[in-house]
Amino acid sequence: MMPRSPRLDHDIERVLVDRAAIEQRVAELGERIASDYAGREGRLLLVPVMTGGLVFAADLMRQLPHRLRLGLVTVSSYPGTSTESRGAAIRGALPAGLEGAHALIIDDILDTGRTLTLLRHEIIAKGAASVATCVLVRKDKPEAMATPCEYSGFDIPDEFVVGYGLDYDDEYRNLPYIGVLRREVIR
Ligand code: 5GP
Ligand code: MG
Image 1 (tube, protein in one colour):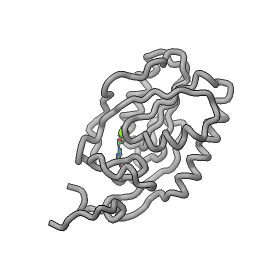
Image 2 (spheres, protein in one colour):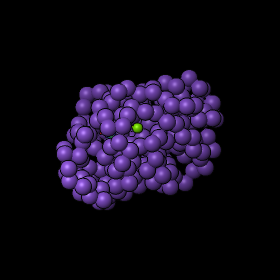
Image 3 (cartoon, helix red, strand yellow):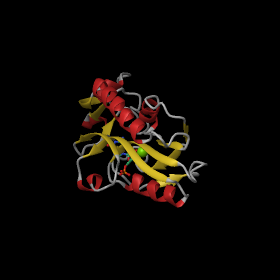
Image 4 (cartoon, helix red, strand yellow):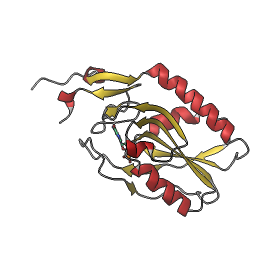
């Protein structure tokens, strides 16, 4: 077997959303969210979905001038080397302070919609004043398009992607763009 290159980008077949496009879109989404949540300052709770939503949430939150809080939630759906969703499950507890909060769930990607649907339901059950969802990319497939999502950055083809938080077997999250893995890399 050939030794693997230490450079992650050698494993990428095609870039779908490049770094500059992400940066511009994150700024636009930030402006929209800032204006939509004006007047709800102090009760905004950002809920990044770990682990993939970490990079997007870190960039997006710095576009928001509001007084806000952060409450992480961990959801697993693509264990290890799997490239197909196995259904969403919350790992551990939901964040504290949801009651009366305006929760904004932030995730990397909207695929089957199971993650956002589950979280929306659970967060409403905790007594949040409002719940909205924000993803950087959404797959162009019926289940994703049918899932309510207030803020979405880009629609992409229904392919397995990595980068900007999205992983394959926990790697590639640090790529600054979103791309499709070379077929040979997928085990
Ligand atoms: P859903 O619950 O909408 O099917 O999937 C959402 C979760 O599945 C995302 O938070 C993400 O972790 C994972 N996921 C969905 N599609 C992809 C993909 O193309 N690549 C990677 N790396 N993860 C994905
Ligand atoms: Mg995820």
